[in-house]
Structures are given as structure tokens and as C-alpha cells.
Amino acid sequence: MHPIFTLTGRLHPLLVHLPIGFLLMALLLRWISGSGRPRFAPLAAAVPFVLLLGVFSALMSCITGLLLSSAGEYDSGTVIFHMWMGIATTLVAALWYSQIKSGQTGRMTGYTGFVLLGLLLLTGHLGGSLTHGNDYLIGALSTADDQAPVPSRRPIADVQQAVAYTEIIQPILSAKCYNCHGPNRQKGKLRMDQATLLMQGGKNGPVIVAGKAGESELIKRVALPLEDEHHMSPKGKPQLTEHERALLSWWIGTGASFTGKVQDLAQTDKVRPILLSLQGNPIQQAGGENSDWPQEPVDPADEKSMTALRARGAVVLPIARNSHYVEVNFMNSPSITDRDIQLLLPLRRQLVSVKLGHTSISDASLETLASCLQIIRLKLDNTSITDKGLAMLGPLSRLKYINLVRTPVTATGVEHLKDLHALRAIYLYQTRVDKRQWPALQALFKGVQLDSGGYVVPTLPVDTQIVRMPRS
Image (cartoon, rainbow, N blue to C red):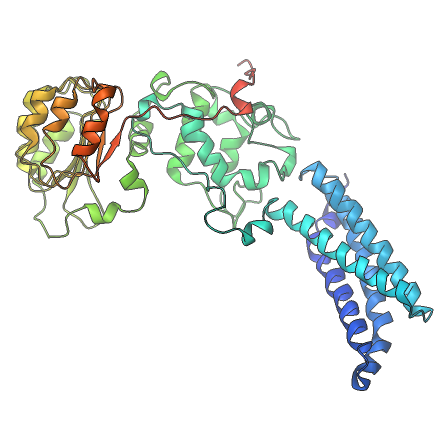
């Protein structure tokens, strides 16, 4: 399409409001002037002129709308319905103008006005659905109870076991890209909410080159300056964060797999801590994070001790800006041993969160951790700790969250935690807790979330589609 036609089509959102205003004004003037009140009777003279403006602006809206729809950026079914309703509105408005101009005042003129009002409402609703989604109008009438839940990233208990696309990449695309490249609108003929269509690309070709992030148009666009007209997302829309851009580059660079787990994909030193930051629990995700941390002041942690921990591969970070409390994350380092855990002791006053998943620690490490009385969150998933080790955690009276996923602990070991009254969540997926003992544990830990895993995820059409990756 010639650029001048493209430019003219993009005037549609501006012009489309004119016929709505003029035609509604004509309807209002017609109703008021015909109400039988003498003081309003002179308004009837203005109806033909206002109605003529409405017919002309409606015709211009139809022309620009046709040009805009030819770009293929919107759902074709809704576009066609909207188009015909717009044409019908214009024709009925022209009919009503001819009736009024010729001096007709009977019921037929009144019926035409009612039909025009109905078409205006329907056409406007369809236009709003194209721009804002199909449930834009009706959703406002729904109560909080009957509205569908807003999709959000489910808390990831173990990021290494997560499916990279569905649990990490797709939520990013949904939040930042689907508004322009989803089911309701396909700007540049690019649709991103289905795997096959995402890999197919848009009118200018593929936007993803599997295994080559630097050559992928998607990565090039998100890296452009915000002021650039080709930058994605457009200026004024929610922007990708630095971490989200890094995750997209990582996923594409590792082959853009739609089924592979994180643990199966190569991870650089840059992306590994970003992936770990996605690993959390419902308490953290729900927005109650700040209330979990201690409020009393504490002295800064010993710098030499933190340096020693970092030398062993640990990530030591403050829990919040201007806070001296810290979190220590060993980042799935299999070489970490019980002896290394001794390095935490100089930080016992500042240490509130420890992540030891996928390390080689044993019960002996828990004896050391028991002396770090400020610990609030403790991740022990995928380690060899046992019931004996859990029995040592009695002094951790502030402990609110403990992850025991894929450990050999049993219900007997979990019972050792019953006196930790601050507990809010215990994660027990794929442990040796017998299903028959679950009711007894729930009765023992009233008010504590006992997570057994086993989530049921609905099968989507995209899950069964065959994706043919372009050859590099």
C-alpha cells in the first residue's frame, strides 16, 4: 500500500469520534425539539445541518477505516463486522437526513432514528473491542467474583525444572507484546500468542532466528532507543525491563525451545542470577514481602566475610535498598560443602534468607544454620538433608518459609518444625511424606501452607503444535 494511503488510514481513530458526536447531537436535538415544549421548538432547525455533518464525517470514517483494515493489524472477523456496521450507520444516517430534510415527521422517521442509535452503539462497541479487547465493555459490568482471573506468572518453586517458554518467556510476551501482536490485533501482521505464528513472523519475515539472538529482529527492536519509531514496545506502552530483555536473548540464543526445561538450556553467568530471581514463593509474589523482613536496625555485615562467601561462588545481596540485612544464594553450586556453610556464621545477625538448593550439604549444615537466628527463608530443595537435620532447626523462631522439595525428609521430620510458630509455608513436593500422613500434618500445622506440588496445567492448542525451527 502506498504510504499516503497508510497515513490516511491511520487518521481513522481521530475521525471516528466526529460522526459519533454529530449523530448523537442530532438525535438529542430531534428529541428535545419534538418534546412539545415551545421554548425548544427552534432547535429543530439545527437538526438537518448537524445530521449532514454526521453523515459526511461517517463517510470519511468509513473510507479511512477501510484503508486502516487493509494493513491486517486487527482480528479479521471483528474488523469485517465493524466495517459493515459502520457502513450501515452511514447509510441509515443518510436516510434519516433525507427524511428530515423533506419534512417527514411520522413514525417512520422516529423508527429510523432508533435504528441509527442502535447502530451507533453497536459499531462503537465493536471499535472499542478491536482496540481494547472483546471484553472491554462487558468486563466493567462484572463483579470481582465472576471475572476471570488475570493471568500472571505462577510462583516457580524450582526454576531449573521450569519449562523455559511457558513459565518464563510467555508471561513476558503476554504482558508486553500481546496488546499489539495478540489475538485482537496483529501489528505488522505479527501474532505472538501462538508458537507457530511467533516463529512464522510478520509481513517483513521471521522475528526470531533460533540460536542467533543477535540476528533476531525481535531482539534488535527491543534494543533500539525508546525514541526510535521501530522500538518495541512502542513509546507510551509498558516497556521490557533489562532482565526481561536478557531472558528473551538467552531463550532465543539457546534455540528458542518451546518445550525445553531451564536445566536443559545453557546458562551464562549473566543469566543465571536472573533466572534465580524468578524462583520464589507465594508470600513473596503476593506483595507481602516487606512485612516478612525485620524492621529493627542492624549493623552492616562484615565485608571480609561477604568477600569470602563470594569467593566460594555465593551471591550476597541486601534484601532491600538501604538495608543491612542480606540474602545468601549459592546458585546451585554442587561444590558447596558443609565446611563452606561455616562462612555464614559471621553474618548471623544480618542473614535473613539462605538459598542452598542443588548443593552437596548434609544435616551438619543445618546445625550451623540453627545458630543464625534471623533466618526467615530457607531453601533446601534438591539436597540430601534428612529428618535428623530438620530436628536441629528448633532455634529458628523467625523462620517463615522452608523449601524441602525433592529431599528425603518424611512426615516425622516435618513434625519437628511444629513449634516454629512463625511458619507460613512448607514446600514438600516429591519428598517421602506419605499421602496417608498428609491429613495429620495439615491438622498439626494449622494456618501453614503445606504445598505438595502436583499442579494441573490445562493443555492449550499451542502445546500440541509442531514447530519447525529454521535451519541455521
